[in-house]
Length: 273
Image 1 (cartoon, one colour):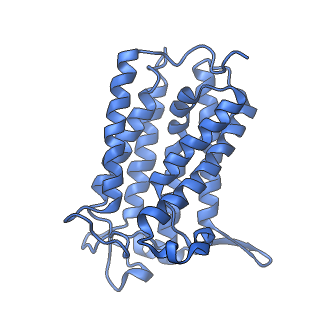
Image 2: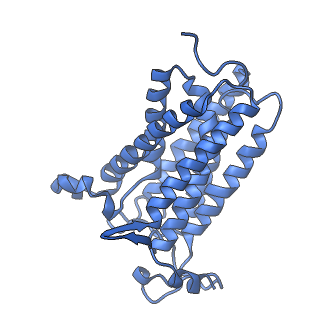
């Protein structure tokens, strides 16, 4: 059934004259917009003085950070030297090649810079941001499925999918596994945690996100085929798994510090002028 669904989908959502709009681009747009909505609504529930303009400004900064960071990490960690020999190809975003780990780092840097400019607490906004971020991951992984990329290993399970670029064999739809676990499951967990009154200690959401994403990504990599130019690095271990381990460690550290400090997410989000 999933295989039939995949073959009925077109990576191009629609065309406007010579312009082709892909589902992947719409996935990024939907992810940022919905994340902004979640951030604003949770901030109001927590009683934080965050305006709609503040949210838009920081989300724009995060968006630029995601795009730049995701591309740079892919070039450095997944390019296997190709981009050093072809530097202009670094800017060919239409050819694909983005790394979640780089996008995450870029989101923190981009968001923190804008928070500093407009006088918003970057630490609290990180907690807010990661509650909405899994929605972007969900749409992004669904777009990977539509594009027929990042597929998994061969499988005999009934939901296996025959991808055009994966040979005449049914494969794990690892993109959908990631959409479910890294996207919907993490979103539901963090959203439920956010409903506690008073809000949980600062850092709780960032730490939880890091741990859950790192664990889910590490496990899914066992059924996902690694990038062809890299293959397996250490036995069955892939680059995606190596980059996920530091996230788990960092998440545990953040959670320990958060509950040691017990600093609540209440009061004023903005710094005094």
